[in-house]
Length: 399
Image (cartoon, rainbow, N blue to C red; front, side, top):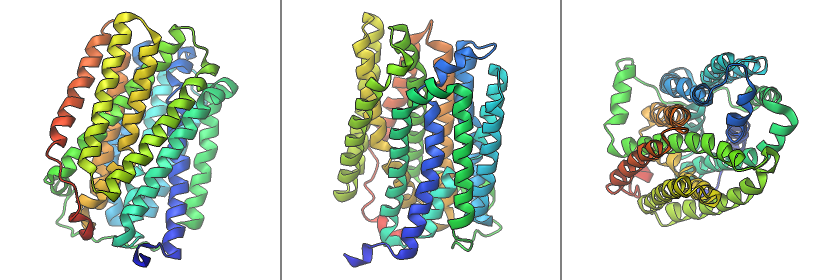
């Protein structure tokens, strides 16, 4: 129907913000498949410290999603995005010159201070009409998925060609390009909700957390974040232990990306067209749980094929959630709380990144099964919570 067609202004906003988010997320995802291997060459590296460095980005990113999201509700999205990109660039510059694992941890913490994901998703909600907002948010979600695919497909090549410091230098250049894109194309006078002064930081958070559906969505972000960082901390190390060369990992990552892409498209279609968000989410959780079972079998039987299967199952499960969770946040939040709601969601997701990587670094050598049990418990709780999740057919009209 015509009312669902994007206007010229909406198209410009959607494609611009998708480009910014693509560069940003490509930069983040590019490090994931190879960091745990390349960081072994840093002075003072241990598995635990590598895990801390791997997840350090998620800690500051998660903590600042909330204040940045709320700040954007008050002072405007563009200003917050520019500040966040500047901080991210500073962290990458420090990473370029970090020769020890300790300085790399500091650099990763600084990178995480550029917490703009929630603000970008809130801005696209500001710049689009309610009847097309879900589609616009889905486009941004798709740009994240595409960035994920390109990053994972190219990471083994860039890792061998540029090394860890060279990759961070390339990320710095991409981040500068994103900042230029913000300065030249993002509207200066974007519409934004006005928050009454009596709505304090903690009151806004309470408003968001009082919505049961938003709590479930945020827990899902935590589960996916923890699973992502722990899986891609472990699997590259395991592959090398079984004799895989770093430059050959694309042979596993490429078909993994194709499988994940197919699942992402089909899941998004089923969720959006038939309004089966709950059913799709339950299916994704089952994939995550079966992935852990496969990893446990691989550990017990010492067979690489089970680990590869676990990687495929996890990635397909992860891609079920990647496009739909941000869309659901905008559906279940009010216009005044969208920035804060996205901040809560991204806080959960990035704290999951930090905890998943840190626990994986601490446990994978001597307590591998304990690591799997911890991940299984959080995924089972997500499954139980999702059983009561309402499909948001009626709420869509309120966004």
